[in-house]
Image (cartoon, rainbow, N blue to C red; front, side):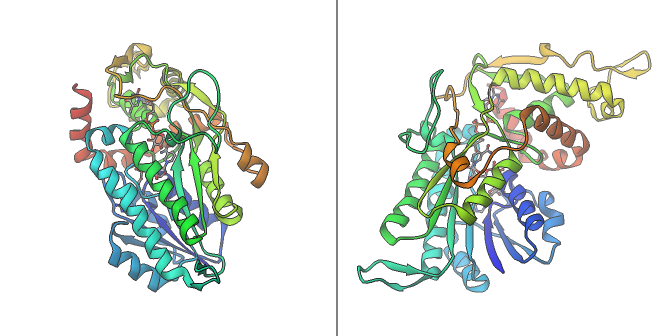
Length: 377
Ligand code: NAD
Ligand code: TDX
């Protein structure tokens, strides 16, 4: 039986990974360590932690004593580190928190793993490691910086982070590589493009646009809306991580992306048209609209159109374009994205229309203060 420590497993991607593990493997134990910050929500994994194979621990990845206790108690085979402060806009408001969680937190986990996984020394003085253990770091394409109109990020593209968020993720990646070089620690890293799908916190572009449409609010597009992101359905990302944890070569970085580049303005337009299509096809979905205009006895959706779009001040240091070349993971491990964007966006929007209770729960409290502060500028 393999025991996984999944940090940040109550967040968007970590939760999807926990669900994938429990679905895919019977003989498994999953320990979720999550501090339940504003971005973490137990409601996302409530059915998973009821499973006897899964345990939830509320705690901080920076907590040395806790990390030690967990390694002693559970004897992990794998650490998969999702826990992070993940929002670029928040990193512009409060960079220090990103250094603490993303860099110090990762280094604390690396040290706990080193303490518990090292078995001795080889003839050159390097640590020797327990059989089959691995530390996997979940990273991002943002470490490579920003592209012009052409080209793709490969694993050998020089690191060039430009936001406090990406600088902190890059530093964490470098620590992971340094532990591999210095201590021969068995590590792998994945660098993925923008994810979308269910349980995505509504401060990120796609869920924010969906939420605002349902509330009849304007749709804030930063700058001129031409910035390009490379979108990948969250389950495809998790499948890639699972493949790399199991079969990725130690010490290697794998880029993960689905060749699905879109300008932000296209994403916003597509979200508008998909919501309209779904509400035309299934009029019952109109019930979730907070803005209910009744025309001829029917809830109208005529007002859901591009007039809702508002161009707002650009993000400081806004990266223009991200695009991933996933050749390495495809050739070495056979990973390919399975959910095309046209299908994934419909699945995602349907999920939001059917899970408004989740949105309302995560968006209560601090979220409203954050939204008012960010979008009143
Ligand atoms: P998220 O913000 O939705 O979730 C982060 C989770 O980490 C939350 O559950 C939060 O409570 C937890 N957390 C935060 N600080 C913690 C701490 N100190 N100790 C323990 N838990 C803590 O983020 P996400 O979008 O799911 O991203 C997960 C990982 O994937 C991150 O490392 C991120 O950098 C990376 N990533 C994200 C994307 C994307 O598009 N969202 C793309 C590529 C890589
Ligand atoms: O209101 C908005 N309006 C807007 O135009 C928001 C929230 C975003 N945007 C733009 C900024 C970006 O160009 O949309 C694009 C996507 O923005 P985010 O959803 O904030 O994602 P991004 O900054 O690209 O970062 C995401 O992908 C890489 C994740 O949040 C990171 O954790 C991941 O590493």
